[in-house]
Length: 104
Image (cartoon, rainbow, N blue to C red):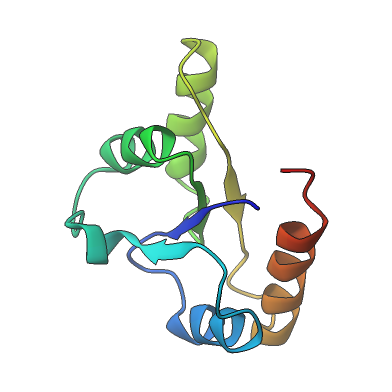
């Protein structure tokens, strides 16, 4: 099953809803692993080492760093951008659908 991490500003209501519906999902918050206030490139490096897909609302900077990693041939498990306008329910359902239908 896929492994996830949420960035520091990810909506906690989405995370709680995901874990309520799928408590065994492997998902951690970056602040719980000592990465509070770290730069995006540091968080992506950690996520790559841990083979975790980063869940984020940050469409302005994370994507640039993710593309830089890919262009440099570095490991990049993935980034899922959840728009702030997406409802909590839809975000939960979409993330769980991805997790449950993954081939990993």
